[in-house]
Image (cartoon, rainbow, N blue to C red):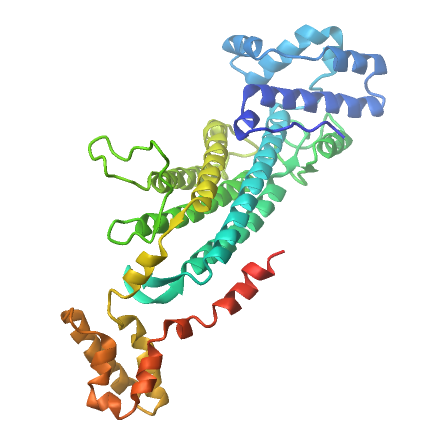
Length: 434
């Protein structure tokens, strides 16, 4: 088994040192495979393995003349290896090492992102349990609807993060392929055994059919998955931004000692992390569109995709790694204000129980149309007059009193009863997670 790189950070995967090191691994592995089949003398393989090295600076210097990165790399390696270098890159095309290396990089990057996602999942689970019964108002169209809990918000994001873990796992599997199949993928000058050997050592699978390149639908799936994950993070941070609004203030980003919110206004505490994540999510979505544009290429290969990928793939992986780290810390340290949640819950003076009243009236035999008319009429009075509340309006309505007793009306406004199935939701989500 080839020694795997230790990856302390995402950026290292996309540095020239890592890329050229992987190119060299692939070339040496191909030579090993050909030695096993008797095509390369053992002493030449030993010379290749012992002398092979490169210098990034020298490769870039040669490339100034060749205008071809792979040729520049091979020239630099040959300067160190000497005569045995004639075996290196035999029967191969540039994309054999370019695309196999890119797959290797994307797999490594994807695995780091999976670790980040799992960390976020655990933090969301912890906060969901912590705030399972923290009552707050649910909103639709930005308007108060019915009560929910802060824990359910975290649970919702937890479930979406689990789906993103599955999506990324599938995308990593799809991109984890290599090719060592020659100029147009026909193995004309190289045995398929070489491809099998190299891919096995790199923990990749051979692409069952390739041309001169690995097909870009694989990369598009990976990039689209990163964009979806970024959109989930934006979804979380958009909710936090709304909850942090001054007139709402149900949740707030942690504001550290010495932190400043505004150069002009000393009082400001802004949701800057959430806003940053929302902005970066746009980059991920834009990059995924570029990846989709790369799927269609001319014949067996052109290089219109290449220049795009040098930007979008490293940038998206690095950006998402950064975003996941930010959001995990954001959720972990998010300040929750239960007292403000109760205050906001009561702002509409009982209107959030309108559906419960409607349904109770229909249970008592009133038609839905008549029940809706009566409850809406009372509700509109509450909307218009801040001194009124829905419960009193119902208690003063002769029509409603014909169907509901005072005790029944009082019970309708019991918010705990509204949320009696929260444990059921948690049992099938948070508590059933393995």
